Image (cartoon, rainbow, N blue to C red; front, side, top):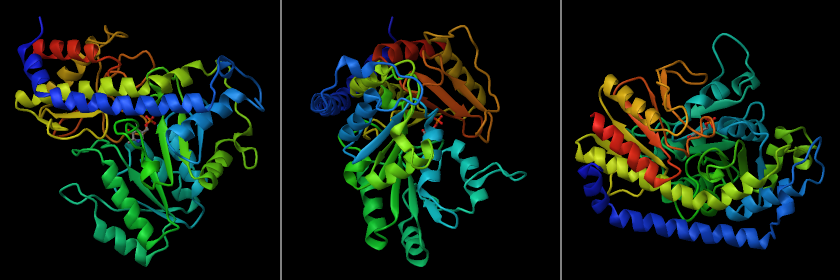
Length: 406
Ligand SMILES: *Cc1c(COP(=O)(O)O)cnc(C)c1O
């Protein structure tokens, strides 16, 4: 029996859902057009080994991503291990000693050590290479601090501005494409040569455009989130202006070898198929996220996005205000997973994260957060960050289990 709250919430969400369906339709068309234009054929799925010179599966996939993201070029690689790895390649590829870059909407926890290193040793962070980082914090109402941004761009030579699209572990909504466009315009009007880089994790296909279409020079993301469609088993991508992507290629492998090599011993089928599925899978995730938000807001918890807001990433934040409730919630998510449903998640110290983190992730692909999963740093006000669901039905059943418990 479905809990009545779910049925009530679904009624409230009719308009939200039709808007989400429409976004998926537009993105599906864009992707289908790119597949046709690039004449993708079964032979592009073939596995390769060794250096993989002339690997047409790799080359076509790069071109396909570039077309879908409307970028000049793209690198898509199974040899990129995670989103953090992709961002690390991009930052080290683009920045040089004594350069200064700024971040203006937060940086994901795992990038903290990449940028600022660790107190006690040289771990090869950007700081260890004398690359300076200035963090411009969001204003108390979570808007961009434009005054500080302008002032910094005028007073210093800034090589790159780092824009995080998703919310990370903070109580705010993700940036919209209009927000990103406004930031990029502001940066370029003062300093046209400053590179605008967007951490696009969790952002692909939530809207009908991507940051590259509103002026971002380069965007970076993970394939085990939105754009891999739940099928890509690993990988990351970097897309944008030719000269910038090529610098990242030099960092990915070796200067001058760049993207001429890089094999895939398992073949490319799931990378192509995942991209094809991605608009639909993101649609499922967005609906799941709105459903959890609507139900918990009926239950008087604070949630983001609210149902009056357009989701700008695939995450639903729920403020539990209580450690036990938060842990119970994550536990129910885990118990409702297809994989490892018999495992109880515990708060744990994780590499790259500052606080203890609890992660419910009973996924087919380890850590995949386009699959229904939930993570939360164990700190006040005890916010759960829920994301994904490959199918809306799975999210609905999971929510029903959560409501049975509390
Ligand atoms: C997921 C994510 C990353 C990368 O995380 P990985 O776990 O290394 O893939 C970076 N930035 C944001 C905003 C993210 O959501």
